[in-house]
Length: 430
Image 1 (cartoon, rainbow, N blue to C red):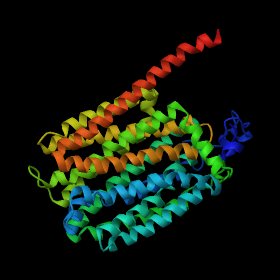
Image 2: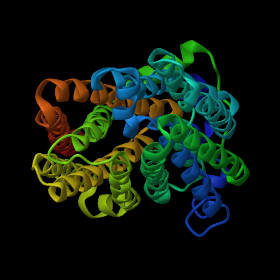
Image 3: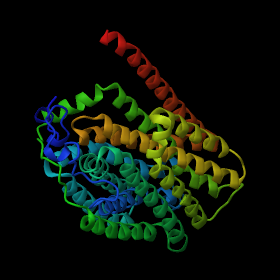
Image 4: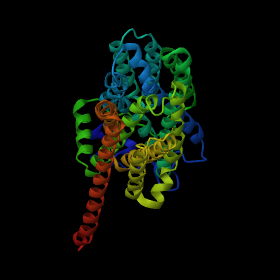
């Protein structure tokens, strides 16, 4: 299907002739060490920081929010689920806007709205208003993830794509970590409202730096906003078995991660740990492990292949979940390290594979992945919190283990499909 029939950029069409800039030996797209690559990497890294810092700004503060509004963990968790749910619902429409108005314009507008709402969140008079503001904030942030991956797929050479996306995901991990650490210590002294206000101010700085640093796109061509074309592109992607598997893998990995980090604050405030809010916030320093595992995902795929890397990520996450059951703080921390490393590695591998697999409408392909990914986060937050309320930490771990089993099952199915296809190729040639 040609770009004209999908609304995708002509630079990534499946059947359009390659422009002169993309011919062998004259590829003008960015590459590590080349012009603009460092600025681009830093800009998208900061966008990732702002996105995750804002998106999960209330997650480490849920026990304090529960206390102020007099609600259980399952109700307070909606301040996280509403934000990720809003992102999941709006990521596809926002990706369509990026096809028409450009990746950089949509990312800039999304950040501007999200940081503005972020400055209003501390003023919420009730839990209901707080949930609504968080949903709006998540919807605004929907313009970042899919547009960023589409920008990278168009502006970075294919061999450097996994590394570039890994750096963006690493920015996510730094944002998630710094947001939780900052909110934990600030909240301990001045309460959760001041702490989320501080995150809003930090995000404003990241948004300004992002806009100043990001190079103008050179390989983007505006597409159409017609709904029929958008739906046709989405249908094409959902008809691809490999893309369907990657979408499900992203959702399941995020179910684990969302459940664990939504509930861990409640667990650590209870016996036998009884940790104060500042220390609980510092627990999220283990996100640094995710920064490393995401940024090295390219080398992992080079050594083990995509499916091998996914098996390793799933096994690492499973080991972390089991270790976290121990009534020992060092073992719980080690479990969180393994869960974080496995999740970010699996996410970087799956999301970069989506960008490589889609031959047209890459923004929509990435948007579908992000939508499923954040649906997984919302499901993990609410189901994980409900399981914790019903059966303690063991219930949350059980939800995570079921999700990892799903990742392994889907990856095994992919391996079998690849073997069947490999056997059919010689027969077809004969």
